[in-house]
Length: 633
Image 1 (cartoon, rainbow, N blue to C red):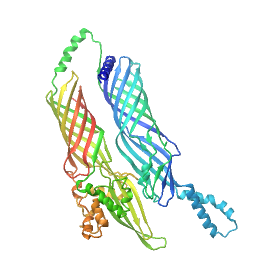
Image 2: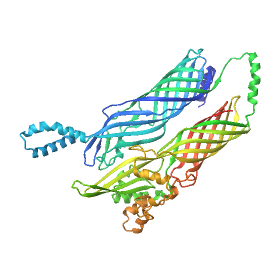
Image 3: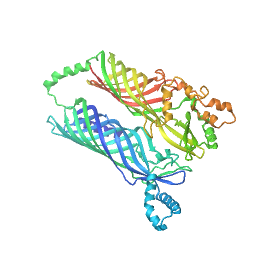
Image 4: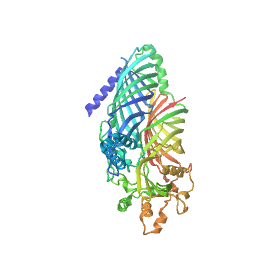
């Protein structure tokens, strides 16, 4: 251990001895990416009629958001530079393709049609000529009629750490050319795993299982890159090329039960990714080292340096800050009154024994059946059947929220303005006003069961209940700091924010976020309605929707021995959890941070955690991130 510390110290001293300049600043990167995949990617899905669908990809692409990294760059006397970047970016992985029946199934259907047609045929062809005449026509018709388009996508937000090493040319010129090579290291910050699937067919009952077999973006990635460009004073503009050798992981096996299974056949699909980007870096702070100063200049500069060292901070300062809440984000979606942890095993057993098709079909072993909240809606669809008679479909839509972790938390950078008071060199306090956009997503499972006189069809999908908020924050913080040298200080702070959420757009994405009539109804009820009559059959006999705990769901649906249990279980009182007022959408948040001051900049690593005891759908929100502040006076 001692040897390691001595080696690190010697290396740092050597680097410092050869360093000429330290630069700190903010960058921006935009990328175009091209996925390199095997066009024969496919996997098979067993349908309820014990047939197989072959899913094949026609197009695969990965799009990446703009990244805004913070960077630090050392430059040596020999024009060599070493740069460290930290930022985050969001990737979206899309697969477009088509599903078709197997050749065996197509041939069987064609042969059945040929046999039926031949039995009714009265022309002059013999059976062989008839088959030769109509086989290709029937086959093409079967292939066209049984072709199903599909689209799948997922989103991942990565923390991105980049290290690059390079050199400069034409150092004395007004414009310099630089080049370098480096490595990106990426870990997931938050994700919306397999968020969307558009598969408009009832040939597969448990469509959520198809998603389990798709390739996924890797949670950790390393990728080499090269870059080059032009530099003038504090501005760098250039290009980079990055190669991701293992962008995706394949070979996943989908859930299996007696009607559906999904197996990935080709494990090499879209393993590689090439990205081409444009980057821009702007330096806010430069510190030169090891410059030789003659004695005459030193006599003039020393009093200035001593004066800056002893100078008291300004009593009042104003400035702006950008928080990057990307190191970690987490939260819980458990509601106390609906959490039935002690009863779960018994209730799951009861639901299995009742052969519940809307809930137990979701694989109890693979999916938690939603500890705390179910939503159900009943509709009727009146239509004219094939015989010309009026018929009715009864449609039960059951939707439940997956419990535990909030599955997706996406926060934009937070922009703040502040006024700071410095009564003493060691102690300060400020008041800040900030804005941030936040999105929270909870995985939901929707089962739509349609009952008619002839049959029952059921389709289960995995969706995402997602709400977007504009957060306004009013905060105050107390700081302690100590001077390191004439240009820098180090310290920490503690503070509290009062946050209020203003509802944003309710975005519906086909096959994914909020793609459910019942989710849209719940959104309006949750954020806008003051009364719960529409969702309470005890108050409104015409109500066609209800909110349940698991016990309520079982009692209402299956407890035939107790009419009272049924009557009192159609609606659980969700009113305390509604976020239909500004007070209900507000909360406090504790903040802790470590601060490094460099002239008029402040770099911070911070942690924030929500603190409130109110009933709330989103609980225990925790964030770790980085922040950059600039004092304007």
